[in-house]
Length: 583
Image 1 (cartoon, rainbow, N blue to C red):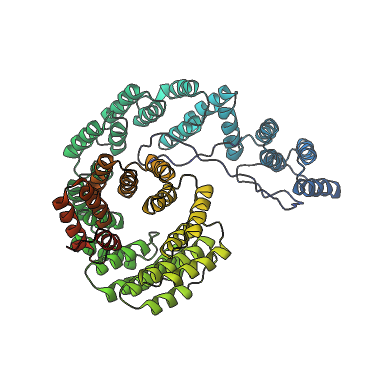
Image 2 (cartoon, rainbow, N blue to C red):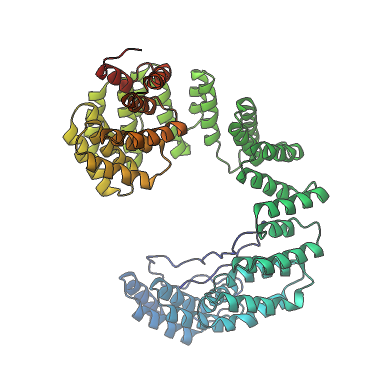
């Protein structure tokens, strides 16, 4: 129902040229007795605001506030025709738009254009409506006139704006045909072919898009936008890579193309070559924060934490020197805290977190949560809980997350009952929070409160039918207790279909197969899980299956591996005790 608003021409090609919606009328409009000031391109009639006119305008606005639109719309249309004031026609259009009345909105916009033929805003609204509707042909002469009247330097912008309007058309083929006709006199311009290339690509006409992009590049061989468009419309990543590398060979300083090439390498998981490209970009612009951030992330991906740390610190130094930069340093502070923790520097990790202040919103909250986790991990449980208690937030999800973190810290410290109590109280405030219910269920199981555990997990499933963790947890609990095994199998099977690559759900499936007596199926599933994730508990389960099959040497080997990874593993201890074994 809404018209299209023009935006600046793209600096890099996009898969489809989507135009933004125009300014929408407010949901509730206060009474405005006098028309709004006129835009610079509107010529207003010389008309005094008398008492009768003031009454009509005020009454229409007050009625519109109550939810009625027809009477106010008719009134404003009548007043606009009588006074010849385009501002009143514009307000009538806004009312119709707010009421989602397309026909009336278009009628008001037509009147607006009639009263103010030079109004660019009225033209924008009109173009948006006719392109979206069945009157698309009415847009063509406007586009033709726009290009004809535009100065040569401004003509490319008009072309991209036209493309964005036509991208919204329901009849894509007719819109593209119009685009071809309107651009026909300007085919010597590179931008004409770029517009045609991007529009053809959006329609799925890759061959035509490629031809147009190649023609644009022929007209301007050093055009980065043409090279990027040609790479975009390429059929495969390899073809795109060839386009970019060929262009860079002739234009080594093409920053946008090199950046696109680096990102393509990242998409192909070629992190080291991608880092080399970003290093070349950094050499040309040593203080480019985007490049510094990309190098930091790539270095983390390549496990080069020293380089990552250096790049992120330089990133922060550049931001400090340019405080007006819109980039948020909070995420980098979090990463540097993580790096410090991995190096065993807890104090340094906390110092990085301290640099995220309350103005950072969500990152500030996440920093407080992370501070509490770090303090608890290093033995200061009371201090960690005080950090959580001091968090002030009005956001319900953040409040729930604070409770979850508190319970997790208590659980990890061995205070299972206290953790259970924390979540029990939290659920009084947030009874339908799936995360709280899930963790509450797991704690209930640890405390032997199996009815509460099952009830809570079933509530999670009822609220979040796609929560595979809940299905898996309930199924595994039944299998572990060796009860209702067909039901356990069905629950775990559902979870596995939702997340077929999850090694922990595979572990549950292997375990329920073992309980059902299907030893070979159990071994196969557990071996798959252990290959994906050599978790001690998966190894313990696989060991017991092999022990039952008579392969005791392999079973003991797996148990020793599990014990080496986690000497206090509860599953290992209970298994050895049940089998009356020692390693």
